[in-house]
Image 1 (cartoon, rainbow, N blue to C red):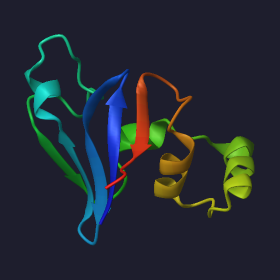
Image 2: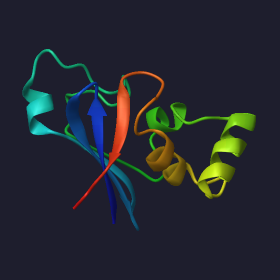
Image 3: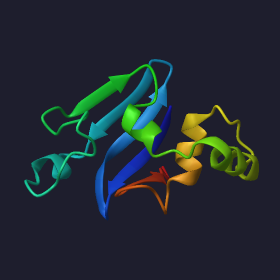
Image 4: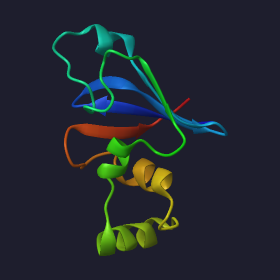
Length: 107
């Protein structure tokens, strides 16, 4: 299992992981309970705590680079151009589109 931590701004929003059953996201309890936080995506409302998908969730796909920029980033990072998970983990930890960042889990 590969687990990463998702932040919205500076607040931990939840955890994202993949395993042999697909992709999974679970909201952090404190994030869910905070009336001032908004969901990470309209397709992943806070009314549900856990989400599962056979492919990387569309929201996370939408923050990945595309086209020539994607090719250059993948080449520089040494990852396959079709590896959405690798691109998400290695390129979305600091400067991303929107407020979401992906931090490597250090467990």
